[in-house]
Image 1: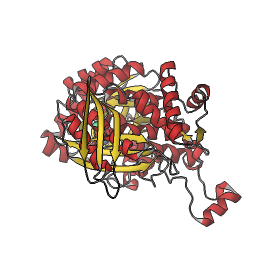
Image 2: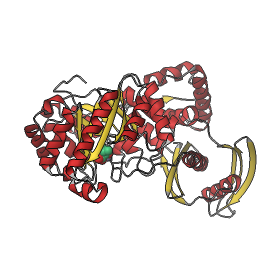
Image 3: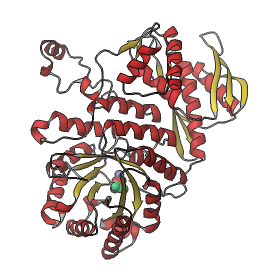
Length: 516
Ligand code: KIV
Ligand code: ZN
């Protein structure tokens, strides 16, 4: 990587650290979809996964490596030969492959987890970097739990791995323990004491346990770090990782203070955030910075008055700069195929003729029940009807009877593999009855952990976006559905959760590796 002292490189780990967190698991097609969008967004390095963890992880990293041409693709590996060999096999087809290897450096981890001495761990770190270097020049090393490590041992380890050939050294706050002044000071200490630090890029990887991941990353940047590891919507282990959209917009909005830039096309931020929500079914909270529903909504009369007079009074960045268009109304009943194609192109979607036909048909269907079609509606159609791959369960027909004098009843027909199955269900209400019908048809009965409904856009004809969370064998799976009829949306979400559960069953991690 050519060093430019004013550029902050964005290393996205949504597909690795993000994906390993509860509810965020994705199948290979979904990972490919997100990886492509991360490339469009302008991410410098996409950490595609942890290839040793399972066949599914390996395969996803390999497929991503084959299609991503501009961004670097990183595969994670513990500091041992088996992991590093496996990571290399998965990423070697990438245009710009990177091996990211790590081992703990804190005495707490050495004593209780690794049960190894400092000298032993230092040797393993160096050997790992040398081995990775025999495959590619592009090697990154992370001393895990760096923020709780002895500073001088950390200096020794960082210097040793740079001597062994690491071109990026990442300082993780693995347990989210650091606070900004202290973390900035640690980075400054490394710059002052690691004699060969100029031969590598210093990176940071912060967890959000104290809600400080973004603040810590910014403090590190002020101290000289030039790579930030982060995730879309801040997903990740426990309280998550540094949110990419927040770090990127902080640097862009406060260019006066930092004088730095990233390669991120900020207008793609909202679309990427929505795509992740659609894939995982996990919505961001309304007051989430940059991408939350209220992030640009001004309610206060005084603020509105100021905004009308001059936007700069209360707006530090425009919705447009993150890809939220001012006017969302795009299409209606009479929009033709050409208009749809034109609009999709403006939104950054390049579809095949066949995919475009499918979207056009769905837009017509939706326009029969909903007056205006918004960007978010189009995105929901694309995700649900174009991108979703082979699935075991499909909804064919749903009819629900409910009301204050009826016993809520759902009759339903579904495709289960190659078979068409019809059954009915009763419940406390229409959703409960629908879920009962699905359980009868699929002969499944997984505990339902959560069910939520949201309106994608405003208005009483808005599409309902529903989320269903099911439990299976200690795992949770999230399904998502969108439709103007919330009962249909709920059925779609339940069925989506079952399809994801099928995927999970065939991909349960073979090697359980504890990581954060
Ligand atoms: O949090 C952490 O320490 C990690 C490393 C593997 C970089 O995720
Ligand atoms: Zn992490």
